[in-house]
Image (cartoon, rainbow over all chains, first blue to last red; front, side, top):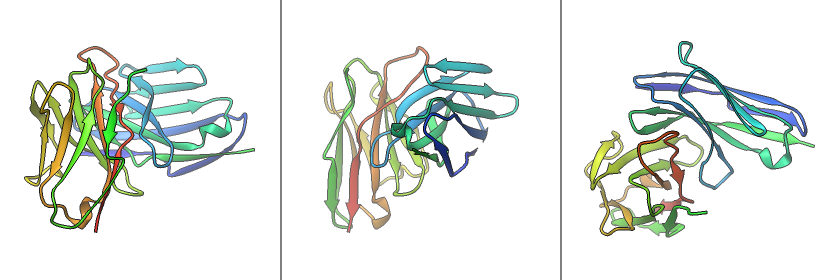
Length: 108
Length: 115
């Protein structure tokens, strides 16, 4: 089975930085994804980690520690359009197992 | 930029009826998936499909569900006898092949409402 935990909600101010943590316990591990999902829309890919360490992609960075079963997504220079749900997903074999998502609200 | 498309965007059906949800994956992709998301809940894996056969399925994907790739472009999910609890957003996804980052590209979803 799998257990993927992330906070339910976070609020931050425009221009600030927010870090969304994700812990996981899964029966298999072939990589960890972060997706962004706006309400009523499809998840869109943000980042992928399969080895330990930090992956940087513009304003978004993601970190993975496989030994700790831990990842975080760092959003810098927050913009209003970043208000969305952020989904942590573990790739087990070839399927994605998702966490419940963290709703980030960016305030002016 | 190529994208996964799904039709219809919204389907309303009565309990016990059959529905077919349609997807057109990105053209050079080889791996296909269906996920669902019940309102307010997490995205759940249903099934993966490769080389014209199911490669993995979840407990949700019981005998009432089936998938098919009837031609070179479409990928369908059929629910034979819908139940109220099948009401959800159904997402199709696809990915190219065996290289990193194994990113799955999601379609816009079909909202299924069973009454």
